[in-house]
Length: 261
Image (cartoon, rainbow, N blue to C red; front, side, top):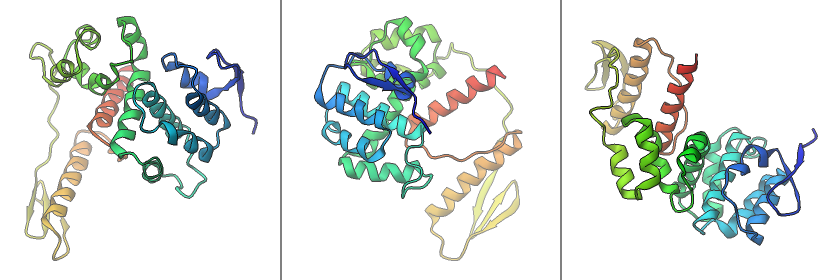
């Protein structure tokens, strides 16, 4: 299968492919740096080991290189570059391998990817508001939550003009003037009695003897959510997330998608 290649506008004199047009275009202007150009060239190879090798020198560098790390992880996940390798179809398994190879915390890798996901999703209104990702990237993880709790015009003004701590605290504080229409409460009642799990009074599950309380509570919470979703007319779907930021981003996308239907 031929790989699509186009001329680039990034000043490195090379050629760019579909990844440039879909992803790299969102990055701020990157300096002409040997390490950065090495990552871009590796991406254009579409070869996962080559891409990983190019990330090693930049994995612990902040600022623009973190944006690059985030966009690379986003490309690997969305384009499923790990498929056909020993990691099968699991991006989570691949991530565990990558953080070990780069010798960085999984939280660093996850946050870099989430920040770039948010930046790309809200790129147009952020640019209209005058947002610059340099020195402001960390605020992005709280953008979806801020949009849940405050008026849109206030959010974009705040993310541009306030510092990180002020924006973070404000984003997490629900604005009582920001009305959210209450919907039906589909929650079900779940309780554990001994080794039995009851949902709405019915014995749904019997735990094996010796099951730890922590495991029982985890199963109870998961099944309670599943039953509540079905009770409300929805269809439950389980997917991997790394942190609250990813979960908020998914919820926000879901609401936007439903609004278009």
